[in-house]
Length: 211
Image 1 (tube, one colour):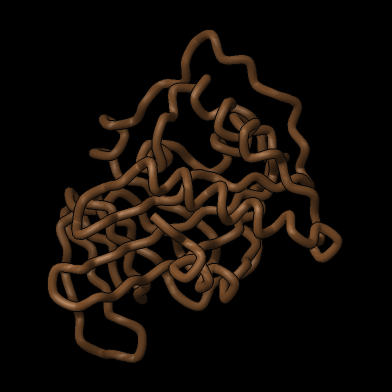
Image 2 (spheres, rainbow, N blue to C red):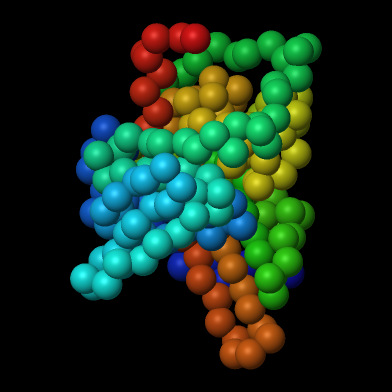
């Protein structure tokens, strides 16, 4: 699949730091969907939210939510998600952490409602090579994409969806980079030919107290 046109959208991206405030809260659903909202209430079994610019209250069951990232940067995970968490391979050796180095992670790629991991790896590589076309414009250095993939696979992470089972601080330790670039592409040809894409760069606080 050719990405030159599809991934042109990646050059209109929003970069943000973990210590900077986002414009909205984000709810990460267990089905892979992410919605930008204003979280109103988190109750024992439900979460109440409204879409940005709307007053209508919506309610979702907690069992359908993986986590919430609040605009302050705080994340809240829910108990049912912990049962799906993967364990890092016991033989994995954590690399030296480079807090000011970036790593481009595999992109989530959904084609006509179906996960397409290989296309996600191609998108990751394409995005990385575009960053490297004029490296002098980058404010940080980026880890070679092959090194990133090797470290993820050694830790037992073989596709983009596996990343949901880890905190970003854990992923940062696995790849040895304090700035992580993530993204998701959805393509739907079933009704109308359309595509949407997005990426984000997160600076991970690697100085937090270790468990």
